[in-house]
Amino acid sequence: NAGVTQTPKFQVLKTGQSMTLQCAQDMNHNSMYWYRQDPGMGLRLIYYSASEGTTDKGEVPNGYNVSRLNKREFSLRLESAAPSQTSVYFCASGGTSSAGELFFGEGSRLTVL
Amino acid sequence: TQLLEQSPQFLSIQEGENLTVYCNSSSVFSSLQWYRQEPGEGPVLLVTVVTGGEVKKLKRLTFQFGDARKDSSLHITAAQPGDTGLYLCAGHDYKLSFGAGTTVTVRA
Image 1: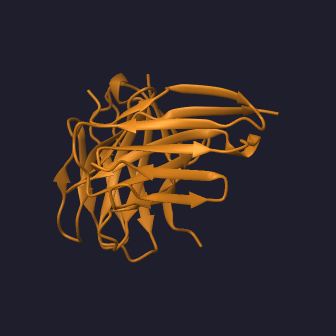
Image 2: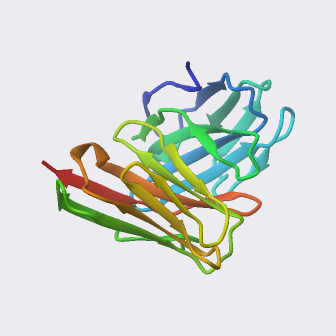
């Protein structure tokens, strides 16, 4: 009963390094999302993918890229990490309901020094 | 500026007390969701309310959607330490917008 799986759970980077956060879901959802969560700011949408083969920018896309590899997998890449990207990142997938409920992974805590 | 404003930001109460968390917006939503997030985990959906004026109960939790579909409240009766967590509301129109959350601590 995996749901949404994210890797890695923790990562420390130096400024300028690159990395990719991986996400996979086993619920056959069409939509997948990447959020970042910062204290006092709630969840902010970075990028989303409404279906396999499509991706769109959210509220805070600068400094990030995404790839919807297939229906199950949606990755988030930081090409040149900056301290402002220190955050907890959550991947989510959406169900078939018109209300848009989301199912979240456990999060990836990223620190950029 | 958050599209959805939650209040209070922090709430600390004794076990057995009641509490209410508010979620307000100037926008109309087609539905509103409440999530609970525990430390080190992702948010988990508690409930979705769709109709203006709707009230849903989940054991000791009561959720209400405002008549105009712009606001919502979460009321917990006889809170328990297991209710501790971050409560997030999220409004859905063509996309989902989250409030900043209310951190609830229930002391034993």
